[in-house]
Image 1 (cartoon, helix red, strand yellow):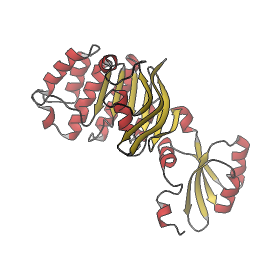
Image 2: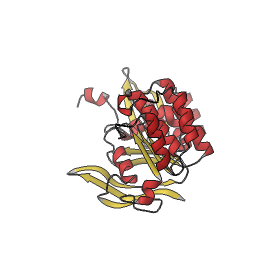
Image 3: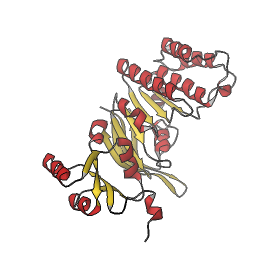
Amino acid sequence: MNAVECRELTRYFGRTVALNDLSFAIKKNTITGLVGPNGAGKTTLLKILCGHLRKTAGDVRVFSDDPFNSLKVSVNTVFIDDHLALPATLTIFDTLEAARLFYPNWDHRLALRLFEYFSFEPRKLHKDLSKGQKSTFNMILGLSARCALTIFDEPTVGMDTAVRRDFYRALLQDYLHHPRTIIFSSHLLGEIEDILEEILLLGEGRKCLHLPVAELRGYAVGVRGPAETVEHFIADRDLFRRERFGRDKIFVAVRNSFSGEALQEAGAMGLEVFPIPAEDLCVYLTARTKGGIDDVFSED
């Protein structure tokens, strides 16, 4: 069963196309990573899914409902980002108490234990917290709400490395005991890759890729060696990246459709063949040129 379904979803802001003919589905009770460069349309998509924005065209369904002005979607969704608006006069402890009354699946025991673990001062106001502390407190709200659709949009802004690791571990632990549909938007794919089941990659408002993480890890390989030999070896393959280093050597990233015999042949030809990390592949697939920044310095 799908928790989210989008068909030809489009959203304009004036003449700017934020989402362009986007179609995908997210299964119920999965953790999906939403990735892509700045301006790819990630936040716009998430705000449409939780009912904060209306689509321009196409169809979107969350729990089989159009999320815009849907009470069903609102009650069963929590949206956490670094611009979360909370009551200015409530202490952060009182905010937890208020959330307890609002979310039907709220786990107050979990909220208090996380609150204590991260050493929050109960009398503080949310607006007086540091950026990292705000993100950590917002994370507590998102996890403790245990909504059927839980959305985290760049939730770790300002967090230090140790706190981010604790957050990822807490999210995975709670998900394993209380499965729900989680969409996690982040630029730090290398950090969150191990907790994701699927990755949805956007580029300029379009879907570039939507695959299980296990398939993405083997989706592409890198080949490095003498330019002429590399070009011969990758002939007719889907090319994602080409970089020149030295006088006559190149690195390429290509679709992994090589047989074991072909890979052995590459070694005999003096070529290096190695897997491409998922984070690097996502950069290559959304880049406007196949040479990256090197194209700026190339001669026409």
